[in-house]
Amino acid sequence: MERETRKALIAAYKERKVVAGLYAVECLATGDHWAGQAADLSTIWNRLDFTLRQGLHRHAGLQAAWRAHGPDAFRLKILETIDEDTPAFAADRLLRERLVHWCAELKAKRL
Image 1 (cartoon, rainbow, N blue to C red):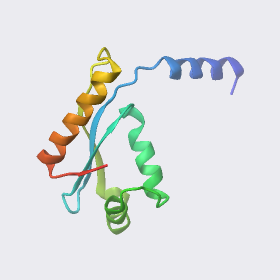
Image 2 (cartoon, rainbow, N blue to C red):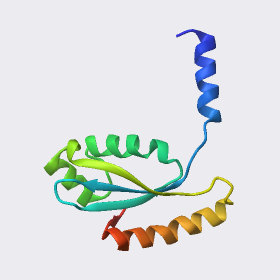
Image 3 (cartoon, helix red, strand yellow):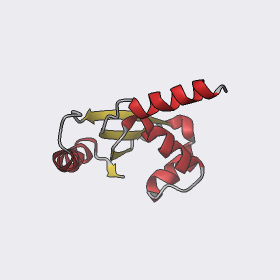
Image 4 (cartoon, one colour):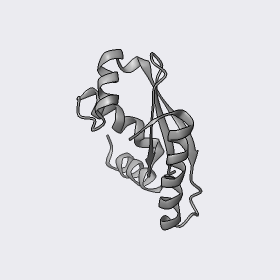
């Protein structure tokens, strides 16, 4: 890859919009849900997929379901996003409060 192309790609990555919010992982085979919050929703599936494929996810129930049903049985759902203008302290509180709501709504386990 050319040096200038690489520099342009790095600059574009650094300038991209980061969207925080809430997500759920659904097991299509069982209907089970796991819900969590992320500072960057655009990267959360890559992180989850990597840790689950490596057998390293900290939530034993999600890891066991992944092993039992395989990666094709899972999908990521974005539940809510937080406005980028929300101050960090308010966004953290809002994410925690809304995560409680979504766990109850979906009968989801918290990630």
